[in-house]
Image (cartoon, rainbow, N blue to C red; front, side):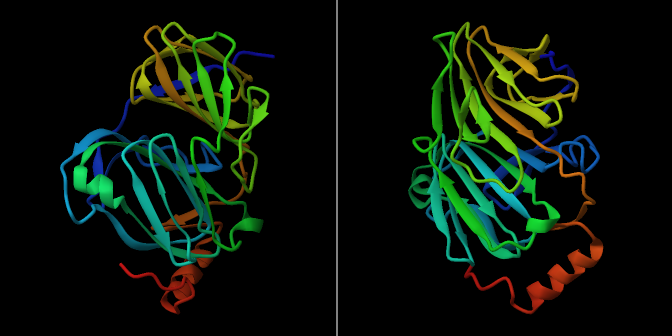
Length: 291
């Protein structure tokens, strides 16, 4: 096996608000003007670094909006997020949980601070990933997976100080429960103080690691808190170590190698398909969801 080289360690771009409940930095595609397929099948990463929200009776969030052609995957680190969609799915994720929504052929959804969290306020820390769907699966029926930390495959790492929670795909010789439409690895790795982990990510997969807490040394590069490590596709082996401890979000996936047409809330293969999505939305084919 060969060591995978680090292409870049990216600082978080300036934050902006999504609705009134999510303060995020967009790492890609806009944050660094990456080609739309640079990290395929991952299309977008909005990272919400820790922020304290004041108590509020009416929950903050993002109102009803449509999606087609991809999946939204929300990783919870602090706070609680609720979800409702026009396909009848709903759920709440908290610390350590993941919400994996397949928009597929089209869905309306809304995301907002869970009621009790909203009333008490406090730390809020999340990340949302958009996963592109292969052309043959873009019109699948909408699907929702609420993957709690207890659902994930828990692995104690050989150093005796660190652990991993595998969400999807295979890592550390075990598989996560998440169902995906193309080969994807997603995991949260928690390095203890003085801990280390050896990850094997297929060289053909586009791979990245988000430093959620602490700081780490990854294949010879220093990666501070809230930074994104982007790898070249030149090897498989990734070594991560931390002096004081760190939490890493590991994402790796087989590129789709298909045309990308992105506009607003839709992610398709052609702009004719984007136009069709707007036509279908206007015709009510995405269902109904109250704001």
